[in-house]
Amino acid sequence: MNENAEEPDHAGLLRPFLASRFRGRYDNVRPESDRRTELFNKLCHRFTEVLDWRYARQVASPEEELRSLGAPSRCYCLCAPKEMDGRMVPLTEALTLVGSGLPLLLVCRPGSLAYFEPEYERGPGQRYILQLPGA
Image (cartoon, rainbow, N blue to C red; front, side):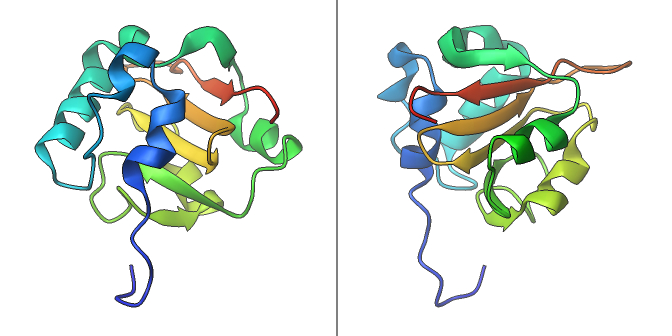
């Protein structure tokens, strides 16, 4: 991230996609913070509790689906690779992490459109579009 770039509102970007009981807990989720590490670990092991599933649906082809929903060319990443975590990155670059086996949450349109893939060990993982009303 360039030094002149404004720091993203990490909590504001992630909070709409979290279950209501977790939204207040993650008000400081800047990269390398203890809360972000805790959130990432929960997405590894307890993702069914942490995310708001009311607006989730499984997808087979995340790139195709996100593009059909009008995802912009850049997205916000919550992911394992530190060089991408907590940053706005090109969507095509972020999608290279699909299938890595580690949790991946991409916020494509703040407050309305995201992609989530939980941790898994083998085979094709579960892939979800989170599309909030009005998206």
